[in-house]
Image (cartoon, rainbow, N blue to C red):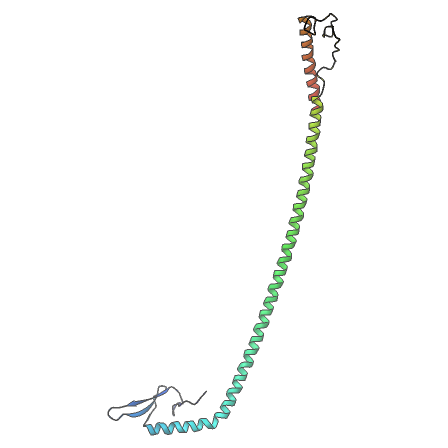
Length: 206
């Protein structure tokens, strides 16, 4: 810090110089700290020269003290900077560790969810295969039941002879029966045989 004129009473540097009076004003040094006043340009110059000589005498010691204080300030600032960097590094490491733990936990949850999904898919596939097999078996049973012969007792048809099983008369013209009575008997017998076949098919599919 350079030289600054200060109050001769309280040594405050909160002073200023102004011209005071009218006609032939004089220079006045006014201290705003204690109210001390120094009148006259010569008195002010003498005060300035005296304080400047004193300041020059102690300037080396002052500079040395200021340099020492600056070095101490820098040392403290460097220590503070190192402490701050160490704290930031510690916080950064803690944050990285937390992120690594969260990533590991997320990976574990993902693996668990994938395992559950795969297990559910396998169970669904097995259930679907079982249902398809059951459906296929039921279809096969229905197919076999659908091919049950209508007549449990087959009718043997001989060319030229009445188609009714209990008649041996010759057939009528343009018919496979000898008469309407044999045709009706054959129809009733076929109807009863068909109903019996349906009951057998129902029991087979139950």
